[in-house]
Image 1 (tube, rainbow, N blue to C red):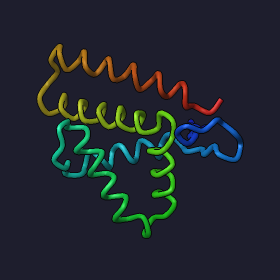
Image 2 (image 1 turned 120 degrees about the horizontal axis):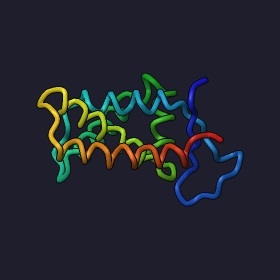
Image 3 (image 1 turned 60 degrees about the horizontal axis):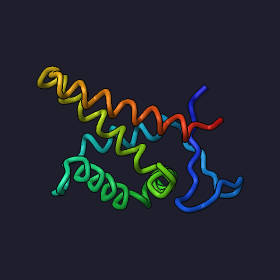
Length: 127
């Protein structure tokens, strides 16, 4: 059975009518897609990738309304954007480790991000 996460809009209290369920695989798809895009200029690398994903989704919102709706609900949900960002960062670090090897610094950073990701996932996972 696929893991689903519950998305509740920022600053709203959880109610049945404002809770949106999204499969974890959909979030993973968005994160993977972000890592394939050319990052936009930004102060932090991750912001360049999330901005590129936002632009990509804006450009394709009429061709794939279902994905755009899921993406929009995700980035405007409590901890949704943080969840997506942490997953993108994990994928980027994994790519860096494959290409350049593993250093203690990169491994430590990966472990910290993995902990953040798992913590957010536990909070968002449909119970």
